[in-house]
Image (cartoon, rainbow, N blue to C red; front, side, top):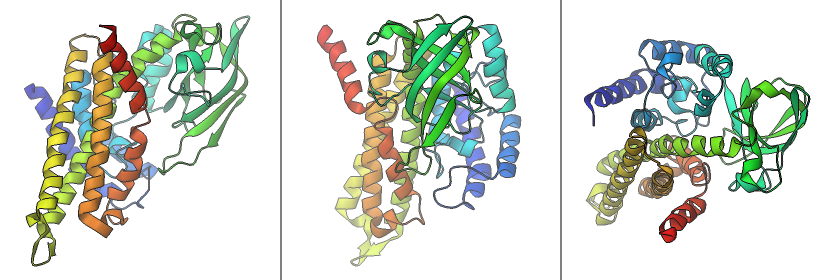
Length: 379
């Protein structure tokens, strides 16, 4: 690992230990947001420490990290109770979707730069009830040209942060139904008339939303890229996002394993410590071995991405192995702690619920296996 990335990891670990977790510990078990004044204080400290919007280009005010750097930050920032979906409790800011930097300079300044400087929130709307795992063919939301504008009609599902966002990227069909080349990406201001949100209750406290677009008028200048090229933009964003996504679940599973090891070493049952039992030893050993392997796959995908290689397959493999490994590790940790594993005094039961979603988000495991199988069989 390059020394500057080892130093970065140390900085993030110290910030999480001394700044983030002490504040989070005062909150209710299922909280997913810090009090506004605490969040502002932590974000100011993060800016001063150089830990702000780390994935965004340096020339626009971000940290300018490559994928390997993003992986390190994601792994450590996830090690808090709300870390699965709000890394570092939001202290490090919210990176604009990376595809915004593919837009015009005006779009970059208005949405990307203002998102970094002002901490503005955003959402990405791809999935629909018609099929979230096959957006190229299943997107039904339509955008019709009307002079200098497009008018968007349709409904998106499972959209995170849509309620409090300032703007979002919406993928809508401008061409023939059922074809990927007919999708266009639009930058849409959240306060545009015709947009409504409805919360969808799920097993995590941080609920996604159903977002409805009813004759939403968007300027043609808000097209991100060329008309009909939205699916290519969508794929680029998803592929690279999967790598730090995978790193985050590795971080959570590693923290859960630490809790389980500490518990096993302190807990006495049947005249000896829990850690003396072979069944417990093997659960801990298996968890560590699997996490090491998953972490290496994630790091490899990030490294290849930084070298400019096509990482579609690497990212799919890393995402599946990391999320499925983390799920198994959390399950073992709950088992080792027994009743305390499902008690809200510890974060394990929350992580257990939230990591279950990770096997579906960013593409379910089955779709990624299909991608890998097609790649191998084509040869």
